[in-house]
Amino acid sequence: MQVIDSILRHQFYSPDRTAFSENDTNVSYRSFFVHAERIRNVLLHHGVKPGDSVALLLPRGISAACCIYGTLFAGACYVPMDIQNPVSRLSYIIGDVQPHCVIGDGERPDWCSASVAWIDINDPAFFKDEPQDDVDVIYRSGAEDIAAILYTSGSTGNPKGVSISCRAIDAFVDWSSTTFGITANDRIAALAPFHFDLSLFDLFTGIHCGAHTCFVPQSLTLSPARLVAWLEDSAITSWYTVPSILGFLAMRGGLAPGRLPEMKRILFAGEVFPLPGLVKLANALPDVALYNLFGPTETNVCTYWPVERTRLGALETIPIGGVACKAGLMVNDEGELLVKGPCVMSGYWQDGDIRTAQEQWYHTGDRVAYNDRGELLYLGRMDRMIKSSGYRIEPAEIEAVINRFEPIQGSVVIGERDPISGQRLVAAVVASDSLALNELRIHLKQNLAPYMQPYRIVQLDALPLLTNGKVDYQAVAEMI
Amino acid sequence: MNDELKSFIFRELVHLPDATLFSDDDDLLEAGLDSMGIMRLVLFIEEKFGVTLPDEEIEPDNIQTLNRISSWIERHR
Image: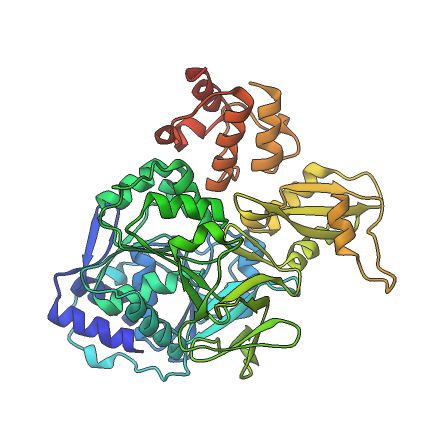
């Protein structure tokens, strides 16, 4: 991986430059590298071998970033897990990944199978001060070796792991650093959780360029004015985030011309940016370049559109633009976007290995069309996938959990249009008996991530069916 | 606290069908109120109560519990 060559170079030639910061802690390239090496050594001590996977159950931050680099130094791939996920989802993912070990904070939790090694991040071995001259023992991964597995919502009712190769990360790092002109003088704000593909920019592009990446304190996402002040105080130049956060800042963050004087570029992806919020952002920050990036986790970024402010007034929805990351794009007869190229995933991970290898063209399930300028427009989904606040949600995953609850006989989850988060989840349920809504809510909280909780649950007498016996989703949407 | 506001918070933001499970001092942020929920809450309060909540006051301290939300609104009546 070229980013590993980059960090080796930076820690040697500019050891004292800051690589990451978090709250009041700054970590130089040299000390970040040394710490990652220690983690690598601990992993090797636990028997981690090239090709193994290491699951991370840690909050976003310097320690987790260090574990990611340590894992890659060992030739293994990292599997970031969402600590906000309920236990049932975490243990499903562990069972599916079959990692060599899990790095967590504290004692092994009860749900984590004893067959998987548990490493506590507070293990004194991580902090042992020993000479680290054995730089050459860093394992050289091949381009097709898997670097990361990112779990996303699955249409089968279970989360599914997207395997991302070293080649795919390198291609994204190359494209993003040159397209946006990231240099060692940049300061990058990192807010995306590591199980989100947006984090690849924060973890790898900045380090490749020798830039300084600053982790945004999580609590600031709840106070827009303080987040803007933090971005200013931290002299952030570059930020890759989701439209819902940017919309929140544009509406209530006190943004205006003159604010964020250091900011050069803001990239966003994960959902369609509603135009009123984008116009407000574009007007408030006239000197900041804005970019709409597009692509499912399986392809990472496959198209992008540099926002043209002068056109915003005349648009109904913003284009997703043209080719990114050297992707090959094709629109088939049904209007579905197909993608091939260096950033496309290697396949889906299942039961400890890549079980469904990716064919040449990845079918995104996104309906697109070209406008008269040759830019792609996103029209919607071919299937029922829902995008909400940047999260991708398969209704089937929620329905499967609802249907396990007595006395539910059937359910349909639908995305209701919402100006704030894009779509909100509504569940229509059919129950044979009187339904204890409180208990259903508790059941959902125990089994689904917070962003998968329906905000409304509507009880129907029966699900409307089409003549072929399948559920009529259109009709359900009209009934709720 | 205004019943309409209370039921809005539980129905739409923290996904509990029954507000009686919750005391006025329980932590709404722990219960699942997130940044998008806060945005909805602020817009709802401004519309229903005809108040303007200053941007710089949108923060956890004013939103954490039902009691804090009440006194935040009162300060701007």
